[in-house]
Length: 124
Image (tube, rainbow, N blue to C red; front, side, top):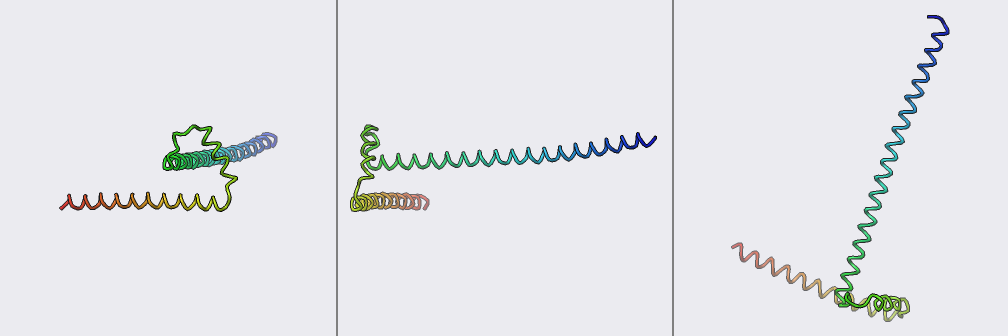
């Protein structure tokens, strides 16, 4: 083999190394893209779950208040008036809501304890 052939083979080896390095970089980039897509998808799923949870909570509150069957336009108009409520009214609303929630929780706890008591009686 003459020098020219050796030089050509050396350049081919260098190009092959460069190609391999580029392929490695491409693989790293692909993995990074996949990771970012997964992260975005997880964040989107989390956002959807949080939104769904919020909507369920709001629906439950409307049901507890007994206004879940009202006309949507009426409810919206009512909600729009909320921002014009005085601090005193807002405090009153919060207190009323707290009292209802407290009473419901007490009733739930009472039922839970009754079920537990019945279960204990039946297991004897």
